[in-house]
Amino acid sequence: MTSEKKIINNFKKVCICRSIKGGTILKAMEDGSLSFEALRRTIRVGTGNCKAKRCRANIEKMISEFKDDQDLPLKPQTVI
Ligand code: FES
Image (cartoon, rainbow, N blue to C red; front, top):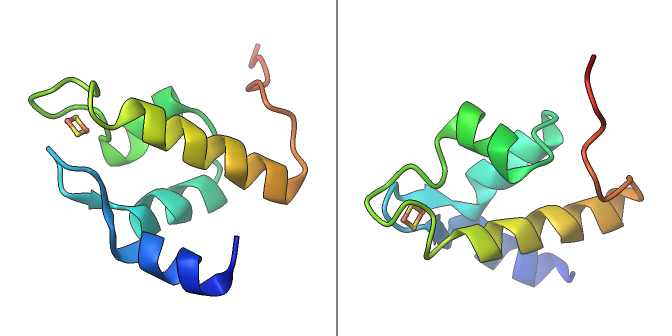
């Protein structure tokens, strides 16, 4: 992703119901929230009125792209 696109995405609202911007999601992913459920717990994405119907696909796409950039496994690791 180009740096211009990254900057634009940082200010774009991804979870519209909760007014959560791409930059907030990116920061949470950098801090280790690498699944939709982890992001839901940490920054409350997908907890608005639509119950993630509008934002889940976009957030999961962001997670996938972030992992591709980081070269991490796609599935979250099981914690025992
Ligand atoms: S847009 Fe994210 S919960 Fe509605």
